[in-house]
Image: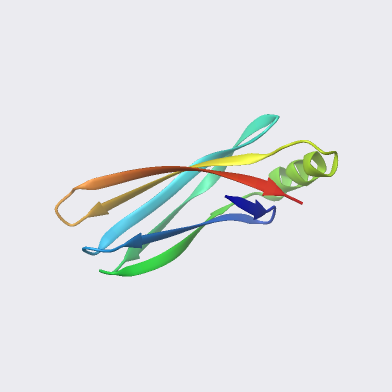
Amino acid sequence: MKQRAGRSIAIGVSCLDEACLASASGVLVAGKRFRLKTANARIPKGGQRTLALKLDPKTLKAIKRRLRRGKKAAAQVVVTAKDAAGNSAVAKRKIKLKC
């Protein structure tokens, strides 16, 4: 997946069979590792939401500078969905950033 560098990293989450609580967290790798703020959402059965993992201004500035210089930056995101019975599912995604 590719995404334009901005104030947040967006990732879509859906729960098809039953309602769930989704949580996303991750790190941004751009020379150094920057933590992304965790995002949570309650999703109804068959519903979908977009979770936004926010970046602080200092991190965003560092990433944009790196991308302008032709270097790479990517976010490694882990999404966990948990239903009412306590069953959980985990998905990992890598999102490349561009200018």
